[in-house]
Amino acid sequence: MAEVGTWEQARAAYWHHNEIWDEEYGWQISLAGQGEDRCAWRIGDVVYKVGKRDTANPYDHATGAEARRRGYRWAPPATTLYEVPGRWGETVPVLAMPYMENDGSEADPVLEAEMQAQAGPDRHGIAVDGTNYVVIAGQPVVIDCCTVRLAGEEGDTRGAA
Ligand SMILES: Nc1ncnc2c1ncn2[C@@H]1O[C@H](COP(=O)(O)OP(=O)(O)OP(=O)(O)O)[C@@H](O)[C@H]1O
Ligand SMILES: [Mg+2]
Image (cartoon, rainbow, N blue to C red; front, side, top):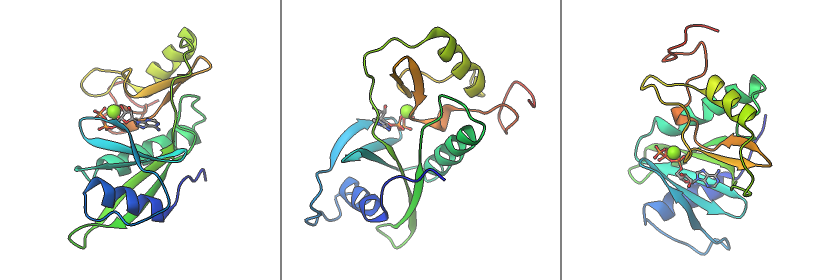
């Protein structure tokens, strides 16, 4: 199992996101990026994703884990789903993954085509877009598996693999 982050930091990211309470954690929390749905809060070399749709983080995590299990080279190297207490006493899923950024290299066209073939297109006909992966030493690495539809899984338009 590829685990990353800590529950305490996941809870801190949720609290920070919702401006509930910022205690003295001893960590810097900064915004790594913001999508339509979620904010990625960076603490050290880990990002914690917090959003309003509770289905996004579990799907992102499960899909990334399955992509790793299949040995797909573009899969996020590690993700952990933390369950933290929400504002109203509910349980909120927060997704941790390593902080990753483009190293300035060009995506290898073969690796990019491999990623697009294995990761999509989704039911809207779009494959993984440029906001949802980074390129490290020519290898595209997906940082948001929410748009990924693995072959043979529900929503895949290619039929079972
Ligand atoms: N592992 C990571 N390392 C660095 N930055 C990240 C990472 N994950 C996410 N980000 C940043 O946070 C942004 C939002 O994250 P993400 O794409 O997962 O959220 P989203 O709301 O699901 O996005 P979308 O708008 O595609 O639905 C990304 O575009 C990126 O800038
Ligand atoms: Mg995204």
